[in-house]
Image (cartoon, rainbow, N blue to C red; front, top):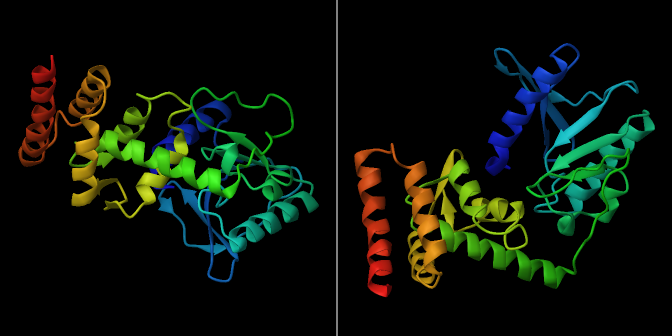
Length: 260
């Protein structure tokens, strides 16, 4: 979920300002090798040591920022999150999830237990006390759509030497919400086409080369938008990093002048 860390940090900052920090507990939750859950509490001096997850009382409000493992689901991950959701409900807690994962990739089993809200541009959050419904696609249709979106986003970022979270987001937002959703960011970040996946990633040589070839097929307006977006994000990059990228981007601009 590294592609969305900045979003989570921004939301948590706004939440602290809105309600204050008294009674607010923020933890990172991870599953262990046997499926058990551990939490590391966020403190003023940094992230605490992992320990067994302690479930909240019935008077608590629980909001998970994440995907419940639905971006890359396995039978084990679905079972584990279903178990945790049921444990929370048994204690009188209604668990909410704010997730960038689109409803087409939600597990109906989890959607019946966890109250989920789709967090992406152009999506209206639920105003009632119930979550949104899962709208799963067939496995074949979902796989085809994931590949289409991931390949499209790969083509758009291919001129960049390095792709940070902000650049990836702004490139995606050049397209409509039906053309590319937040799932494309996760899939490309997590794919075998990329390396160095903490603060950003770089496309491997073959993926970058093929992407730049296909990028030339874009209409001039979209191509100019891509070049301008990359240059805006990397205007203050190092001389070596910037020179490599400027050379690539100028090649595309030269191609535009030849077409016009």
